[in-house]
Image (cartoon, rainbow, N blue to C red; front, top):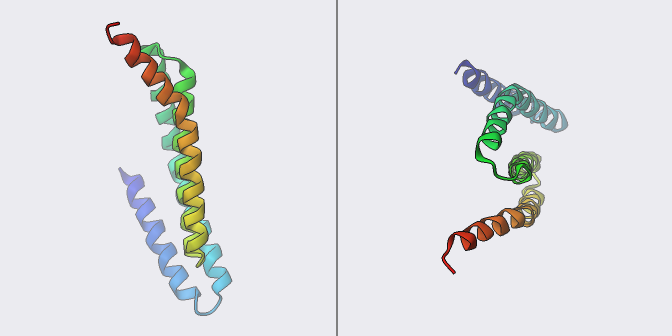
Length: 130
């Protein structure tokens, strides 16, 4: 639970630093913002390994094709990466570009989700009486 306090503290410190530095050097303000975000990302990475371990145990218990779970994790990763990138774009004053990144990410996620949707439909049709 203490990790959330670290994340919040880094977020607040980063925001304050960018507010203070921006009138003096706008380019440093952007760098401070990106570095703060990366520090938070590195703090969270340790928790992601436990999520992957839990997914592995779910894969072993369910008996469903492990490729579908890998695809699900890739979709989640794309979502987080796109959101992070769009946030950086917005922070640098390029909110229009950030919107395009979000749109591109949503299209990629939709395309990546098609095999999962197909598998779900197959399972449903197998369960329905003929």
